[in-house]
Each structure stands twice: as C-alpha cells, then as structure tokens.
Amino acid sequence: MVIEGARLGGTCVNVGCVPKKITFNAALMAETIHEAKSYGFNVSETAPFDWATFKKKRDAYIVRLNGIYERNLANDKVEYLHGWAKVLNRNEVEVKLDDGTTALVKAKKILVAVGGYPTPPPAIPGAEFGTNSDGFFEIENLPKKVALVGAGYIAVEFAGMFNALGVETHLFIRHDTFLRNFDPMIQEGITKEYERLGVHLHKQSAATKVEKDASGKLSISYKDSNGEGTLSDVDHLIWAIGRTPATKNLGLEDAGVKLNEKGYVVVDDYQNTNVDNVYALGDVTGQVELTPVAIAAGRKLASRLFGGEQFKDAHLSYSNIPSVVFAHPEVGSIGLTEPEAVEKYGRENLKIYKTNFTGLYYTMMDPEQKGPTSYKLVTVLPEEKVVGLHIFGQGSGEMLQGFGVAVKMGATKADFDACVAIHPTSAEELVTMK
Image 1 (cartoon, rainbow, N blue to C red):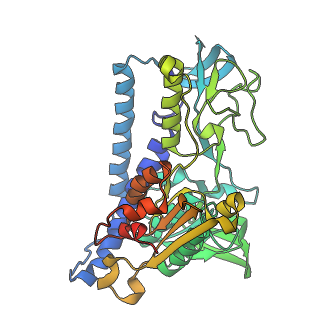
Image 2: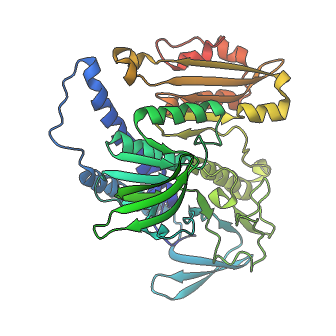
Image 3: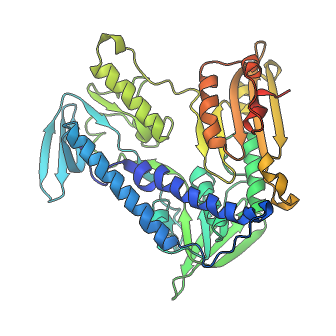
C-alpha cells in the first residue's frame, strides 16, 4: 500500500528535477539562439519567449506522469490511499482521507519516505511576500526582474535559467561563493562565470525587509559587503535556502521513532529506524538528498526484506554518489573534494590533476562569449586511486555518469590514462591529464 497526500511522484516529479530540467532545456535553447550568430546563422526572434505556453505544456507533462504512476500502481496491484498518514505504532498507521474521515491501516512493515519541503524564510518583515522553490513552478508569466536568496543548487539553477531567458536576475548569498559543498574549483569558477554572464550577485548579504507596493512589485532591503541597499521593482522573490524534513505531525516521536536535532529520521546502514518494522529512506533521513539515491536505497531495502536469503545484506553504499548541478555551465562531482581529501589522507599523500580550457564549441565566438571548462582529479598515492572527480563545463551532466562508474569501481589515474581519448570532445581531457 502507498499513502500519499499530494501528487504522486513526490518532489522530483512535481516541483523538482523533472520540471526543473525541462526549464533548463528552454534556457539552453535561449543561449543557443543567442550564440548561433557566431556560427553564421541569422536568427531573429519575432516575439519574446512565451513562458505562459511553455508552462502550460510543462505542467501538462507532469500531470501525465502523475497519471502514469497511478496506473502503474493499479497494474501492479498496489493499493493507493490519498490522504495524510500518522504513525501510531510499529504496525499501525492512521490516514486522514480527502473526505475528512480516517482509516486505520495495519501493516507488518512501515516505510517512511515522505521527503521534505522548502525551508521557511527568515523571520523578517514582509518575508511572506516572497515564494519558495515550489512556487517557482507556479509563476505564470516571464518576469522582468527577480531576486533569489540562497547559495545551494536550487537557487543557482533557478538563477541561471532566469538569466538565460533574459530576466534581470539578482542572487543573494551569505558568503563570497555559492555551491559551497562542492570543490573550491567549482565554487570559484561557477561564481565567476555567473558574474560574467550578467547575474547580479549580492555577496555576504542578508535580506532585512521586504515590502510590496500597490502594483505588486517588491522592494527588498538588505545588508551586504558594500553596506546597506534596497532592490526595487522586483516581480518575484524566491527563497531557496534549503529543505526541511517533512517529519512534523507524522506521529513518529510518539511512536518512539528517533529523530535527530534537525528533524531527520535516524537510520542505520540498512535504513532501519530504532523501532522494529519501521524503516526510512530518502530526503527524510538527510543522508544524500537526491532522488536517485532514494530509489536506489528503496530497491536495496525491498531486496533485503522480500528478496530471500541471498539479499540479506543488501544496502546502499552512500559513498561516491555522483551529483550534477544544472547551472550555466553544468557542474558534476563525485567523491571527495580536495579539502576533504586533504583532511582524510593528508596533503603529502595526494596528487591533484587540474586543467582549464576553452571547449571547441566556443572557438567560433568572440572572446567575451567564451565559457570556461575546468576539470580536476583528486588522487591518493601511491597508486593514484581517483577519490574525487570534479568538472564544470558544457555537457558535464551526461559526462559524469560514465566517469562515475569508473570512480565507483576504484579506478586509478593509470586506468583513466589507459582509456583512448575520444576526439574532439571535452571529456577527453579527463583521460589525458598530465
């Protein structure tokens, strides 16, 4: 049985990966149209980007996916209740149904995979005039001016998309760089590239007040490294300051399930909670908050619980998980950052390989149009095992999946070198580094 209170598919399908990537594709097309002149094309736009039509088609695709998931559940004979669940004990769940009635579900095993929700904005005057990352997908018309607060991948992706689509884009970050969980090469390179592309970065900043005028325009008062300021005539303010596990009102604590100080469900390596028969996985555990991670953990758990003796030890390894940011350009990363590797192995036991270059795509363009590409391999001596791979540049998202397999298998620099380069590609630089 599956119990869901919102739309089937969760965050990824409805207000995350899928509609985000579709919007990213639109932004890439806008960039390509702009760059086509350098290749001899005379492209003239007879009308601005039709956001409203684009949104309508994007939304229709998501609704179609919702229907596919519901039909798949029915075809697999999985019972589906639409409502909000509360765990009563290790074998019982109470569900508040859409009509207001409640149903009591008894089960031998309970899996908590409720994910999370956008972290609420800071308690400043007028914060409610902004929206959150979910609200991005509800914007009906292409804005002229937007402000985003946040330095994680959600804020960075949205800022890149808006900017590529011609929107005046302001990004407020607390430090001097964003994507601060990534390798310094990526932090510094992508931050610099966003500035080159025209994103207005407000570094070391904090919003202090938001006001809304009669026309619906917003004014944002803030403090940053240059002092105090006000950004006016803003169409949308998006708070993208993280996500919070959706564990409130689930009855978990009353049922004895342990949560940590941030509200995440505490689990062991096998997704077991401290209560027998109750399991948890995905964003609600705070391990690695990516959709494919939850899927992989779910498959391992299902195999262990129902797959027979040969799967009794099945569980997901949370090391060397590849991740991509659909920024401009794309970012890819797997394994340890250079600082993490230094802390774990010591600087003297590492050898770092780096390269910076201009991809062949940009050779037809003027210098100010050329985007950067940077790659880094973090290896551990003496065998030069690759423990970290970090890339940004065109195509990094697709590229990382294959290299992720190599890193997961324990490849060394010699293994990379033994692979013949595919020319001319950017990816070949990863197997020809000196």
